[in-house]
Image (tube, rainbow, N blue to C red; front, side, top):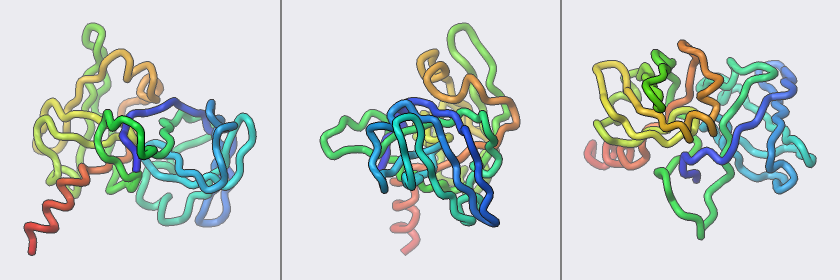
Length: 194
């Protein structure tokens, strides 16, 4: 379980293609604090530490992960959002994020407006149905509040802190992003369906 409050960013330093699978090596500031088997949300996708040293960690990406996330679009030099799993005594400042990507979308706008940035992301129907104005969604692992919901997208306003301390400063328009809908909305849908 994660909060969607990005802890830091890392940089992909090596990608090993293993047929339908891949192994990513990511330079991580907190790599020396990791243990084998730890969970690290990487652009919102929960990955398991397979190897690590003082400067980096390696993660195995299964064929299914590459199929349903945007991680397969990344390359050496890509900047990624990172968050370690929530500890029981931590504050929950974002919202409950599982690190299980529901679908992908794409960046439609990331433009500066004064000190803030307007951020618009195209939402597939599989995600849009779980969204409400002022509701929560995780975009590449960032817990964001929807400022405006259109028929096919969501608009967010990004503070200077979030822009500078996540990978957003390195994101071009049209970049694919991982989307995780609010957990409570998904449970509510299932309960009401019965």
